[in-house]
Image (cartoon, rainbow, N blue to C red; front, top):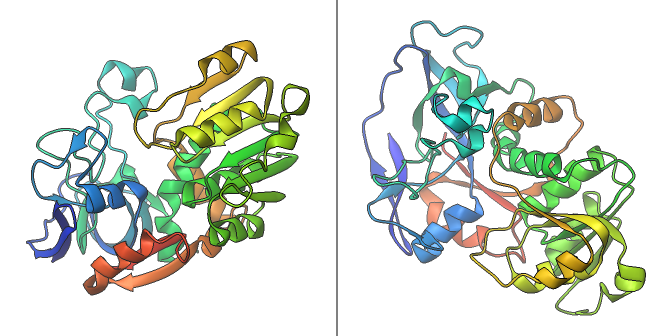
Length: 343
């Protein structure tokens, strides 16, 4: 089989390797679609994310779906030929945080395509993947591309859970990449009364408008676009911060009402935070990291037609064109979610 391996910044190679057979409780999957995530782009462009650096070649990818080709002993409720979305979340189920139900904080997490531990956890951008049956969410009725969107959708469903009650709330989303747009979809599904979104490119803002935002603001062309929302100590109840960039966070905090909620999803490295404003307005800053059970909820929401991710998939390229796919994925003037077809 072929897999997609990052060796160093801008050194992405297609490598041949031998496919494995499934063991007890496992399934073998012919990967059909894989979405390029922001973390994949960081590894490709910079060789790491913040202080996390590549120390050995690593297969990228954690947003994948595919068709089951073989079942291991004891596997039930799945069948050969079935399309499944594969969760990259692989907690140990035995550490203190797993026992507390905080699986996304597992001390022994084996999350696909992560250089956080060493040896690195190899990713899922490969033609054949063996996964635990518990990782596989049946995706009957979806396309492979939609099923591969379950992972970023789960990130945003977890973020919406961190935000708490959204019914009737006024919501600000800073950053309109895939996570920002999926936060818009999640907030709208949860009953948000108004959603305003900010970004720096007209392409992403147009997509935000087409996918649930009531108003969009180009912060590059209109740097004071949020000023009107600062009147009377602020307007918004909830901020989904999806850039990881200090100016976006500061602008969002200025537009939040007292006792508003900040959900920080963007990962751009450490940054300066306006603590004085957070204190004076009694704001709550809540982190949001990965997901676990939300993965399966996301698949069900897509299957029921309650969340439509199809418009976010802007390009699908063959595995042979992987480098081109990564270059396109990094271009926010033309790409929202670029995917790779492995079949």
